[in-house]
Image 1 (tube, protein in one colour):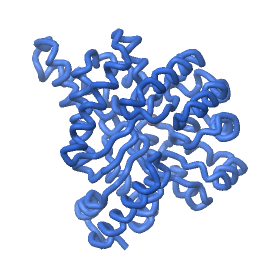
Image 2 (cartoon, rainbow, N blue to C red):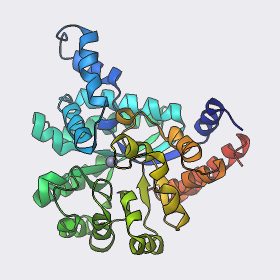
Image 3 (spheres, helix red, strand yellow):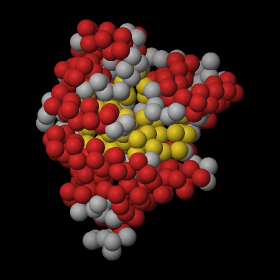
Image 4 (cartoon, rainbow, N blue to C red):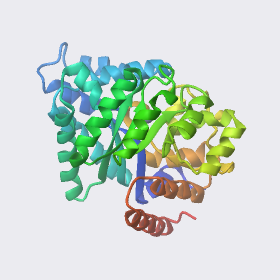
Length: 347
Ligand SMILES: [Zn+2]
């Protein structure tokens, strides 16, 4: 029986990909303090500021998490703030053994909160990410995440921003935010247009609200992947449809527990969805806000959700296959994963 620390080290040693990861939610309190400090002295000193900010990392429930997310976003006010956040994310991913990540970012939030032009935010992020990749760091590509509460018009605007931002390694769009604010189906024409423009498409669904949003994501939006989607398990017909369609779910188990979407580990449906043939993948979502990394999510699979280490590896491999990387890059990364897993004794 492997000790927890040994297992974490072995999981870190395997190259990994992550396909559901929010840049904003990856900002740890130390980085956030540095960002805030750059603008001038902190009221009451650094320790008092740290205590104030610590509240943003504790969530009573899903609405409370969304409010913390928005509050954290309100502290990001210049392209340099995003460059700092990107550096810290690349460091965290490298330490965790992540080689490739599709990173969600919501530039419209900053345009609305601080008047920051999306192109300036995305230019800063992609410049930093490219320079880290050139120095041997993880390769990042970006999905722009729309905010459901901004409505159909907001998503149309986002598709235009994404189309213009291909030079910044933006490859597609998603929709997040308050799932109860608007039905998923309302975005169908915008998703059609995004597809027409060659943008890849995912959508948060079946996280805070029930199976209906997953049905709409699958049948009406024709999303290529579904963010979370765990509440699909409440509908057996939907589970069969997801398995048949082979539309991957971007599962983020620790996130579900921390937001209260799933009440406890015993009730987490990931194992049941996997056993029913649904293409589950594993991701950290908002690593700093939920206190988890992908390697730690692999541990969760083994220690909380009843998978073997070998099965955790296969879910990691599936995460690579579900990514929007070119096929030859997927093959290369999967080859490296298997080699490293053999060396690490994951069997
Ligand atoms: Zn998310």
